View (tube, one colour):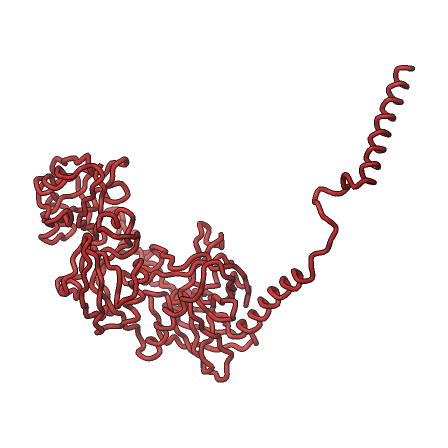
Length: 509
């Protein structure tokens, strides 16, 4: 009992000593008593509060200024019933399945998107994928009025469309210049996501000149998006991306997502490109597209070293659209790297596409190239892209009758002559039939991620000079055997699926 009382008195003495020490320290301002978050107790300066209020008021002003010009678009289309014909029906069961192939009623399909008014008499910019194949387009304004819209024109290559409503004195959006937009600046996205009309979200310009592969199916598609982290969801498509001055700098078009909903990044079509397309659609009813007649790719680090470039920028020429290609006639060759057009620097594919698009068909442009260290300039007369694009025919590959492949450890590939069956199925031209098929790619070799086994054909050695066709193993031997580790070889490659040539530079190991 005495021991228990003694421990109690000792504990009380320790607690009292601790509290007394704390009070003494506080009196001399040795420590502060407070919660987990530390604060000096002072209010933020009035200037900081005013700056935050000014930024908030700016967003409010932009929203109030632009939102009246934004519209909600409702689209009705007819989905054709699926037929059982043409499917893989087991032999002998054709008659059984025919009973299910009776005429069916087409089912109406509804979708929604956004747009914004660009003229007081009712012209509206939106996305091609919002109104394509629409039977009926209904436009709703912020004041509640609804109109039936006419589709003036669409362009799948840029995903831009123009529609029109019969009205006057409408509120319009101011169009800015996306070339002046800077990465990191504030932007607002306005639209109708997930059925929530006239929603405003804020973010920044995350990147410019972003290529989103596979988004636009056309071989002439211009992929040059503004990337933003302003929240964009289904239904935002066609709405404006607005800068801090209340000017539209892009048309919200797509999102990067594995779920189909916003997950951090969205993409907008630059407004200067969209405006050019809009002007053509209104004036001509279609887009006048110009082309150099070349297949092109962005330059990577190995291409730059192989071509003798001072920086990793430019567009490499992989091939031509045909014998009548204006670039081919002018003297441009596969392996050339386009670095300028009419004095404007060309740093990537999207830049070249936009410069060509701005020039227009029939105009002659001066194309500056670097050919393995030598600068050259060629005048090229741009041609008009045909309205109906040819669809590539894809051929299969058979393993039957494939000759024994030969390995090149310096490149990390194995090659073999083209099997006759493959040549026939793929409808290969004589030039490509004589090449060497890539049959295997070593994951630890220079060709990994560069060449595709069973789909790529080595057609020519472009560099080191002199360039020569590759029609046999010996044609490749005399080049590869002469190269030392660290040197580059530049090859002209034909891809069976794309039915087009490209250029690849490999660093010999």
